[in-house]
Length: 415
Ligand code: 3LM
Image 1 (cartoon, rainbow, N blue to C red):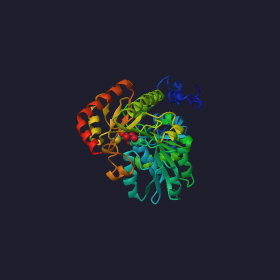
Image 2 (image 1 turned 120 degrees about the vertical axis):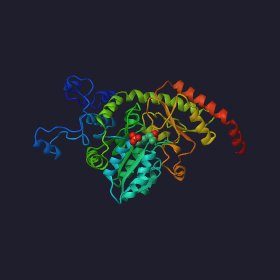
Image 3 (image 1 turned 90 degrees about the vertical axis):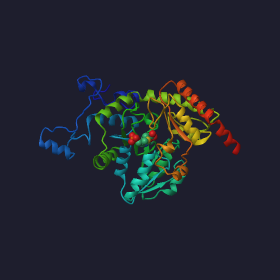
Image 4 (image 1 turned 30 degrees about the horizontal axis):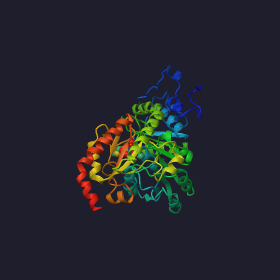
């Protein structure tokens, strides 16, 4: 253990997730870092306060700008993502908005893939366009499409990989190379992977954003976000986007819960991946399942790129079933252990219907254009015993298809 609490980057992921930046001896021997529940910080003199405000002296003055508990979480997240710096936010959307507002002005263009988390999509499509920012959707699973799309107006290239909800895989390295030919800032939403499975900065991304509500927190008890990347960009996001434009500051209590959550991130991600591989194989072999979108399956179109940039394939499995939407609804309504809820990355297995829930911000035409099928259901594989997850799915399939057999047979005959 180093004297000042700064651990060498060569130490293992969990070692750094548990220890980085905290030395008990500096805190009365407290094994867990104290939580600084303070909105403001007292100055010793008026001169000192003025100097801290002017940025001439280090120090805390107000939690919307910085706070020691948030600072420790930022140190750990930056370290785990292999980046210089990080800034926390009160939600994933708070992080995304703070980052984007810091990077663009009227007349600029943002290029994104058409598949994004529903509220990110509406932030780009509806909110930002009102302020004179052009949003161009390009199929980023084909990086060559970006080459002809970028211009000096392109200030940001933004994507998720795997994308929410249909697991499109974008080659981070290839896209970053093309974006950098016009000096665009490459922003990757790494929520589905966490730094344990994928580290976009090492592949050329400039900023990583997270909904820490998901795997980083890991227990479904908070809403939070983070922006991670080069120190100069993070400085800008903190002092422009977060401080003045969104004010989306995280509470110290929630930062503390995330610090606790990431201590077990490696263990939890390994378990999510182990179980998801088993569930994906089960679904792929199920006679009623027509398509499984899991990058770990060799049959999946994004498998080769996913294998190149992800350590394992994560816990998210969207799939489509025979009988379309009516059957999907019956399946969802027949589950018992698996919880019908949005969000993801919790200990509990969750299932939802993107077209009517997380992606209801897309119009029917947009859902069709960006391949978010009406029939798609999205499973977030939790930490329960995998046999119990599969048994619940099996019971629900049986219940759904008993109830709809007549409809299917009719549909089959018509087809
Ligand atoms: C969901 N997603 O169920 P918050 N980026 C990604 C996300 O999946 C999300 C955010 C950002 C879901 C939330 S839908 C009402 C529930 C890839 C959130 C936004 O602001 O922390 O929710 O993060 O897919």
